Length: 521
Image 1 (cartoon, rainbow, N blue to C red):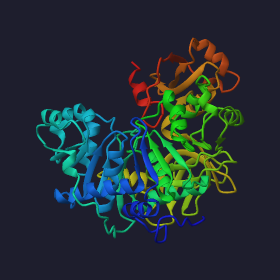
Image 2: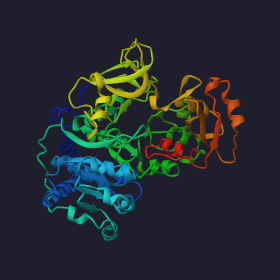
Image 3: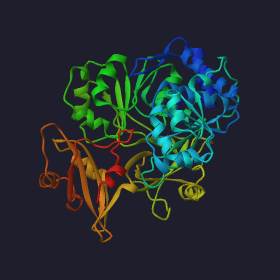
Image 4: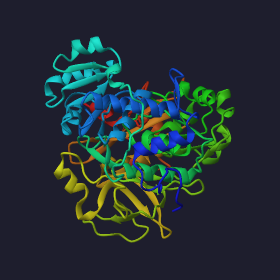
């Protein structure tokens, strides 16, 4: 793999705090980050200065020796600045899912015995509901609404944002190893409770380097990132590659179809990662002037059954055929490709295999579970924090077990097929929900779709489809089954259908199947 001389010192040996300082020195007055909702923007020098103020403030408050500090904020400049301030002083960030509630939220905060949480007023209700369950939390730093926080969180010492801003803005030595943990990121929890992954600095840098190489990202580029900063997608695949080359970043607090093209045009974005079913949402939307009068040069990400050439022609941009492959635990494993479908080329710093249920390696071309091993230190998570049994299960036999069905070809290209957790057992067959969704998405009236299995009391499941439709369109189960009959196996055809006004979503754009499952009686 080509070496990227982007991060000062041998590019492969730099922690994230030092990386920011090197970029600020090199690109000082260039624009770095913009908040789409407000238009607030900071140059590289201004952003670096803000992170230094926060880092010195934490030290002045006596918090510089903490092992972990939690952040629970919407995607905003303050979140990003706090994140990099922690990286400069060697404190591990615990990135809390801002949508979490109840026991799940308490578990995330308690897992690392965090004493300090940085948050905002919009999360006070969630926190007040679990305040008695927070065993270690002592200090809550509010970026806003300090007085309201004192009323909701009476058990904790409430500090204002200003107290976090130290007087000094000088840089830090950042002389700690890039093999150390930078952040705890949580898995989505689609198959059980969310698990906290210890992500090393080097893992993040490597993932970003793969993006720079795959898409030839330069300082002329601007990424549009409407994804949460507690997720690997925004932090490692959007923001960090831009920072490493001196590019621009536009962040928004969630993907909005109504704002997408106007944001892209206003801020002259040049690339965008489509997560979840965003590609399908863009395709299904009514045409608008901005969709062809923009500066985007490419989109990449999770594929849906939208014709590749038609998509490129309509939106006047390049759509990567390859999706790449990565995960919170493993980092960026396969390089996305413009000209070839599938997940892409497995990078030479990883070894991958396809195995059966007994961990026997399968021949090239056969499908099974994807397992991964790193050939370089500190490019993968090594454990789930506070969950030794789950860690042993996932990393058994010296391989990380992804829970993904995949296959390899004889050229080393990886093809993702389905999540094992989204298989549906129908008449003795294990069916991929993803394959059924692919077929339903091609219906001309459908704008979004999610498929789940419903237990039928016999140990088998029935297929239920949830869809949203284009304006003034209708769809019955019988019509859907007739449409799907020629393109999927009979036992895969949905046996029930529910039309939704709006699809519930995770913040990464995926249909929230956990929410849909709870609607089943």
